Length: 372
Image 1 (tube, rainbow, N blue to C red):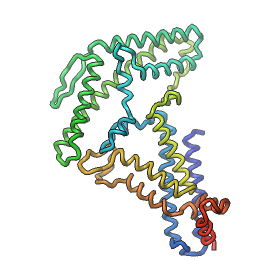
Image 2: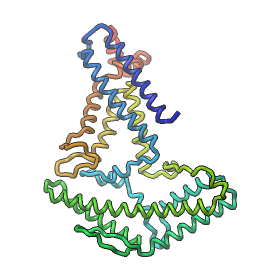
Image 3: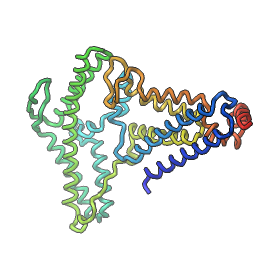
Image 4: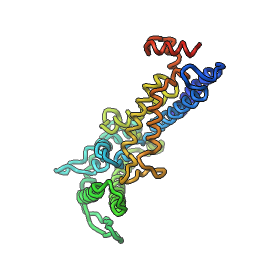
């Protein structure tokens, strides 16, 4: 049974528990309760909490069960006044993996990534000591070859403001320097925001497009060099019997000891969505959970706010000005912060009887009043 299926099953169970409890509350025979909310009013407020909880929980499950998921691209594409901190959090792993040190030291980020692959390769094929040494030799040789290859000029196509592209001979160091120039052009265009001038937005889009194309070519170089390492390990280290085994499945997840700020941030977001979404579904600490979820989703809104005069986010589903679906969800959660929906249908309703003093005397008084 997959983790994804288990998560969805638990979510369905939680939603069912809430709906059953809700039905019991709504079928008590009174159309209007002492707190001023009608049965229909309670129903839709609880439904709102369940819908947002379901959204958060499933989103968290999707991130948890997708090994390749990372918020790096989302953060790097952030716009608005707070884009600087968000982009700093994302960093740029691609550039880090292609940037050699001042004395041509192999990129530390790529050394760690390749080292993890070689270690997993040795473990998966259960290599004996002599083959382990051979794999390490291949690893070291591949790093030396890459250092030599990328120091040589390679023909590339430099995209200018007007076609056609201009061919040029550039080393990797020069290509990275040119990418920095393209990024500076993007930053210069962004410095003109907010602006309603269409030419400013067109300039920004052109600069972003040019930088993105150059970046994709850099990524293709990294993929090519990584593929060479894997090919040399497979052909030069494994015996014919070992080659009959299924190819090793690579883990896209980094070990915790290798986590940096971005990985910790992604883990916090993923588990926050899971835990907060589950609490909303179960009606557990519903008011506190609503506030915490509102703050979490507000951080998503601030990464790409639809501010007048700023570029529209790449995942935009329509045309917004200040208010989008994310902000509406935040406002809905803030409203639920002041409404005890968890006592109406959820575990909060059970906690007030098991621990009558957990919410103070008001909680117990409201519980008794609602039972009458």
